[in-house]
Amino acid sequence: MTTMLEVAHKAGVSKATVSRVLSGNGYVSPATKERVFKAIKESGYRPNLLARNLATSKSQSIGLVVTNTLYHGTYFSELLFQVARMTEDHGRQLILADGKHSAEEERAAIQFLLDLRCDAIIIYPRFISIDALDEIIHQHKQPIMVINRKLLKNDSYCIYTDHRESSFRAVNYLFELGHREIAFITGSLDSPTGLQRLAGYKAALEGRRIPLNNDRIYQGKWTPASGAAAVHSLLDKRVSFSAMVASNDDMAIGALKALSDAGIDVPHQVSLLGFDDIPMAPYCRPSLSSVRIPVSEMIAAIVDKLVDILDGGEINKRQTFIAELMIRDSVAKGPWADR
Image 1 (cartoon, one colour):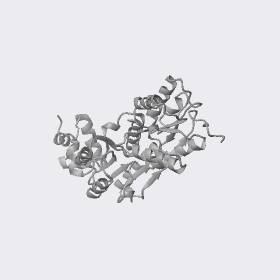
Image 2 (spheres, one colour; image 1 turned 90 degrees about the vertical axis):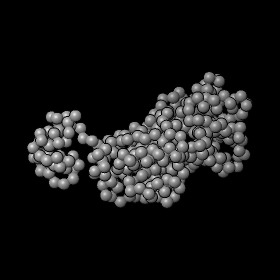
Image 3 (tube, one colour; image 1 turned 180 degrees about the horizontal axis):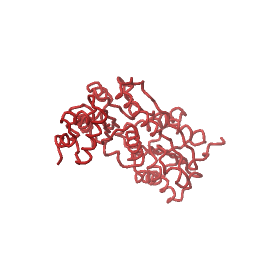
Image 4 (cartoon, one colour; image 1 turned 45 degrees about the horizontal axis):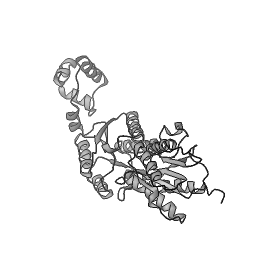
């Protein structure tokens, strides 16, 4: 393996000069830089990135923490794609760390990225509390940005959308179409997003003075199979419903198939609405109405914020993104539309 000293001899410079060229610290003439880079290319030298990071405190990398229970599903594929694309556009490398199954493991993943000298870290938390996130941000000099949680003390370090409000608006839209018996498939209830979307559903019922019927609520698991299971459960219980809201599109697609298999026409017998507006939603039959979460815009904003901070800029105030109802063929007027 070629060493830095061998590169220096080949370029006719000192080892310290090669180090300055690689780190970008200190002046080196353009001609000398050219000789060093030529020697690196000809010798096949690969610098020890960890050692360079320790020496310069810069790695040109951004870390991302996501718990592995969230990896499956189209929404998180989109999130990861957008983070990777945006970090590449800014000339940074993305390093993914697994938050696994607990707050302690999410903390460990953050520390792993800090130990690798990532210049900044993005976390999509599932288990760590708001108070703990605020504490972590305060303790470390590297900027740590939080997606999908509203922080109390470091609100400029988070970007999120109001899931409760978007769920409230979606259910109210179905009320306005003339639906009163609306079933709801929750996400996992150890998920802040799942809890907020369920809260929005309940708030919409309360606002319309419609009694809560727990038989119309099915606890899903974010998967198409759990969406189908929700339909089977409601039909087995003979629970009446003219509309259904699923807490993500994957479950809505599972529900759509189960309704079709049961001979129930969507949208003429049951209207169906999901969340996230995944790329597949317009191509279902019927095309799936959904609450669009602006993932691309959120990721662009958070990466731009981090790069601005790393380049010495000021951090801006918290940004809240508004979800948008994407109405397609899976919803129609309900039984109470003309009453």
